[in-house]
Picture 1 (cartoon, rainbow, N blue to C red):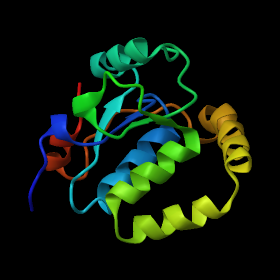
Picture 2 (picture 1 turned 180 degrees about the vertical axis):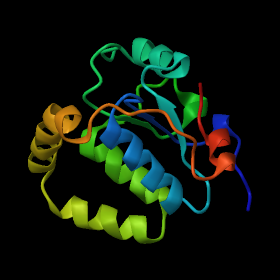
Picture 3 (picture 1 turned 90 degrees about the vertical axis):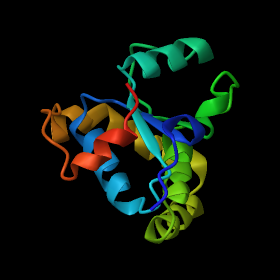
Picture 4 (picture 1 turned 90 degrees about the horizontal axis):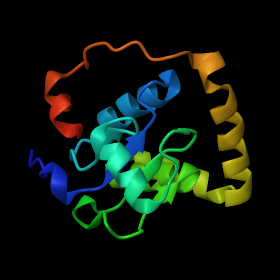
Length: 145
């Protein structure tokens, strides 16, 4: 399988301390059989640099950030909340694209209202993430630091 170098692909920035967010990342890793999507924690150096460069909150991690082209990360081209989720699913292809199509049926304001509600309760429901090894060690290469 061709692995795209981390600098030439879409990147999903996520809350690295959130149990739900980490579970979603692991699901996306399984769905992305073409290994196109890369990941970075919002708290990481790469995540913090991107947030600051784009004028996004660097301490409030209630939204994921999808960056469609990491090689052009200086451009203000990013998607937040459910638009970012849908874009990440589309990059994964296969069954994930069908999931994206289902989500797109729901109007964005409704989707994002649901996203904000889950974001508010996610730590209470899913807890804080306790680091553990990835199921596949080769997945570690897909994370930016």
